[in-house]
Image (cartoon, rainbow, N blue to C red; front, side, top):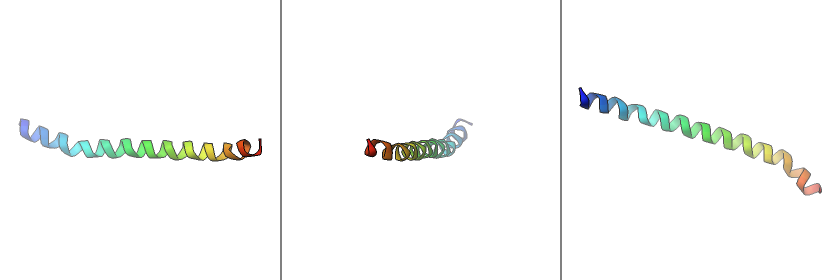
Length: 45
């Protein structure tokens, strides 16, 4: 029982890591896009 439980936990771990990485990458992309939209204002001033 314990071994199978650990196996399922190890199988679910990469999925959680992938989800977290996707969230981080998407938030980074949106952050970079927002900074890109602000960049012309900084350059012009």
